[in-house]
Amino acid sequence: MLTDINQMPSDARVWVYQCNRALTDAEVKAITDKTVEFTDNWTAHKQELLAGCAILYNRFLILMIDEKKAIASGCSIDSSVHFIQSLEKEFHVSFFDRMLFAYKDGDRVEALPKNEFEKAISDGKITDDTIVFNNLVQTKQEFDSKWEVPLKDSWHKSLMGG
Image 1: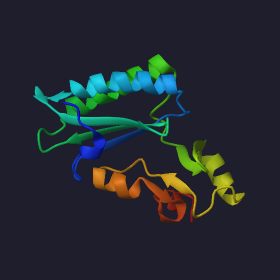
Image 2: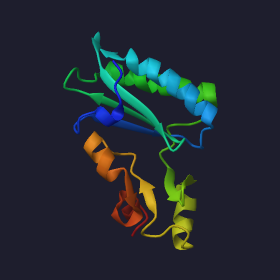
Image 3: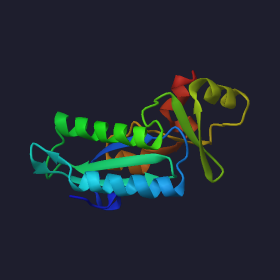
């Protein structure tokens, strides 16, 4: 069953899939339609999951589940991964590149491979106050408070040796 991610409880489970490039508005619409259909029919052990989805900044595919209704099982999580992989094939994108770091540059979201991200920091293009995305958040509460954070408050900083 589908619900709005903004209506999800603070302990809802979250998965953030970052696209390797900005999606066009047409791709966002098509992927949203397919994801809505997927989440509306997502089950765990034949129990309907209370799920939500959104695409933010034309780059991040967000899935959430309220596990008070039904807990996501290994099989249901696998089905979501297979679904995301099918989107990758259809739209010629990658949602699983964990070494691509996204950050805000004005009102745009950009993403760089780790080595280029480190260079942008050393060149001063990315500063301690640059907003970065923590795609490792696990709950809606973390998503709301720790997904978009300044570099100085993120795990990215420690990865860079800072």
